Every structure is written in structure tokens, then in C-alpha cells.
Length: 220
Image (cartoon, rainbow, N blue to C red; front, side, top):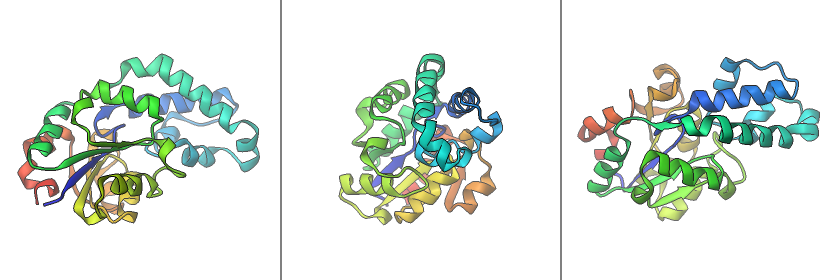
């Protein structure tokens, strides 16, 4: 049985992917880049350091990449953060995992101040042992940095943990750190894309993992 469960936040515990995609798409258009909602959404799960280069040239990144990202952050905070809600059974799942002896970690690309708000929205502030933010790492997912930091904080190897995420970028990053990943479909990515990225199991969302906990990789 693993010693820790490492959860992604956006799209895994929180219903926020579309909201982030809207903020990114609006920011791109604001700065003159013809990016559709669907294009922006396909990149959610990456941090800004990996998402922005998909749409901006190196010259454009130097010119207004940081300004664009800051505009996007302010837009999300003012217009969309109040709309973020947790998926069903999120606190129940984390309590179930803790009851099974697992330590709980959050591996997120969010900024530190955003992370604290997300934990409160999800109702899991007192259920998390370790959390990381984008300030803790040099590169965001799909680089393994976030998971490497979590493992170091937990004091365990990758094989002693299970990651839970909604994007191929979660699975790729966790895999590079030697961590098997349970995929969830509630973030909008397909089961085939999650399995191709390395997910060992795929479920509709947190409530299904909670209901079938004893059958999942978290209990094996």
C-alpha cells in the first residue's frame, strides 16, 4: 500500500478548468493573440511558464509575456475565482485516504496566495500534510519539479506515492518522478489521452474514487 496520495487541484478537486481557460483566452486576445477557448483549454494543467510559449514567440514573450500573465491572474481573481467550486466528495475522499494511513499532499502550479484560497474552497485546509506552489519550483508540469519537491517534503520515493490528476501533464510529470497516476475525467481530458500519458487507472472523478476506494491504487 502507498504511503502518500498526491493530488492536483484544478480540474481534479476543483471545477475550475473552464474558468482558467476563459481567463487565458481573454488575456491572449487582450494582447493581440488569436487564441480560441478550445486552444487555451487544451493547455490547462501547465503553468504559465509552459503555456505561454505555446502561443507566443520568444520575442513576444520578452516583450509582454509577464504583463500578459499578470493581466490573466488579475482577471481570473476578479471574474472567475468566485465561481470556483469543489467536485463532490472531495473532503470525504481525503478523509478516507487519511483514515487508510496515507499522508495527503497537493502538487499544484498555482501561486502560493492562490493555493491557500483553493484549499479553503475545496474544504480541505486541515486535511493536507504537504502542499507545493509554483514558487517552490523552477518549472511547472509536465516537468517533474513539483512532484520532486513533494516527495522531498514527504521524505519518500516516488514508488511509495500515488498521484491523482486530470490532465496528461499531471501523469507525465508524475511518471518522470517515478509516481503512478490515477486519472480523473472531470477536468475534461479523455480517458485515452490520460492512459497514453501513463495513468494506471481512470475514474470519472473524486466521488467515484471515494466510493471505490478499496479497489483503487490508493489501497493496493
